[in-house]
Length: 390
Ligand code: SF4
Ligand code: FES
Image (cartoon, rainbow, N blue to C red; front, top):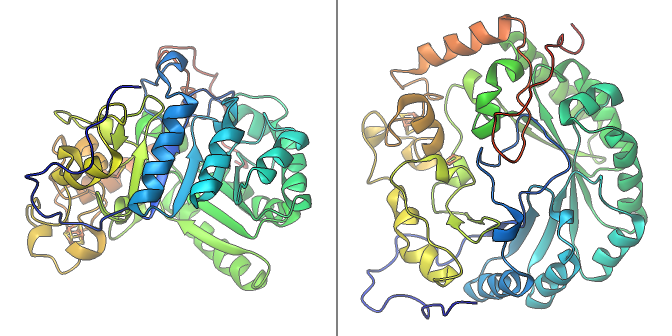
C-alpha cells in the first residue's frame, strides 16, 4: 500500500462539521450477479482488478473507528462477491464498528452466513425485487432469486441476527405492495424499507420504465399507514417517498458531508454514492490520504457542506438547515447546475416542469429496462413488458 499522509494537514482551518460521520458506506465491489435497472452504482463501474485489497479495507475500518464512526454498511454491488468478507467483518467487530450487511442474498449459503455471524456481523439487510417470483426474476434479470431470499431470511432468523427487508418500489412492482409487506413479515423482518426509487444513475436512465403515477404513489401511502398500524410491535416501517411527487426534498445523505462517508471499491472517498456524476469534482483516495483528513479537509466534502454555497430560494429559506437544499446530484442531473435548488422542492422554478415529466412518463407504456451491466448501458435491453398488475 502507498504511504498515506498522517492525519490532518497542519495549516488546516477549523472544520465546519462533526469530527466524524455516523456511518461508513463501504462499497466493497461493483460485482453483482443481479442487474437491477435502478441500481445506485455509477454507470461506469469499478473493475475487480482495481478493488481495494483485504488489508486496505481493514486499514480503512481501523481509521474509521479511530475517528469515531459508529456504523459500517457493507455494500456493493454484492458484498458477498468478496471472498474476504469474513476477514473484513471480523476487523469491523474487533475495532467496535456495528456492521450491517446489505445483500441480495443469492450468493449466500447457510455455512457462510453462520461464519459471518461468528465473525461478529451485527445485522442483515436483504433486498427483494417483488413478492411475485417471475416478476422478481425479470426485474433483477436473475432466475430463482426469490426462493433463495426466503431461505436466507430463514437462516438470518435461525442465527439470531436482526433482519431488515429493503423493497425498492416502482411502477413494475407497485401493485404488489401488500404481498411484499406479507413477505417481509413471513421472512421475520423487524424492519421493512418501502423505498420508492430515487432517480440517479441507472434509475435515471430507466426513469420512464420505473416511474409510478401519482395515484399509485398515494395508494402506497395509505397501504403503508394501515400496515404500520396493523403490525405495531411486529415490524417497523421506513417509507421513502418519490422525490417527483414530494413538496419538499429530502436532506440527501442527511446533508452533504454531514452523516455519511462513502468509500468506493477502488478506494475513492465520496460524500454520496452518486457524487462522481458531478463534473469538475476531484475525489481523494484512501490509498493516498487518511480518511479523517479527507472527511475534514477534502475539497469534495467541503464543496457543499453547510449552507454557504446556496443560491436563492434556498439561501433565505427557513428550511435550509432541515433539507440542505435537497440533493446536489439530482439538482445537477436535472438542471445542469449542482448549486441550484433540487427540483423536488416546490419552491424551485423547475418543480412544475419536473412534476409534468413524471406525470407524462408514468402514464405512457413502460419502455424496456436497460439492465445494469459492467461495460455500461450499451448492452441489450429487455423486451418491452406490461406493468405488474395492470
Ligand atoms: Fe429546502 Fe431550498 Fe426548498 Fe427551502 S427552497 S425547502 S431550503 S430546497
Ligand atoms: Fe449525491 Fe444526493 S445523491 S447529494
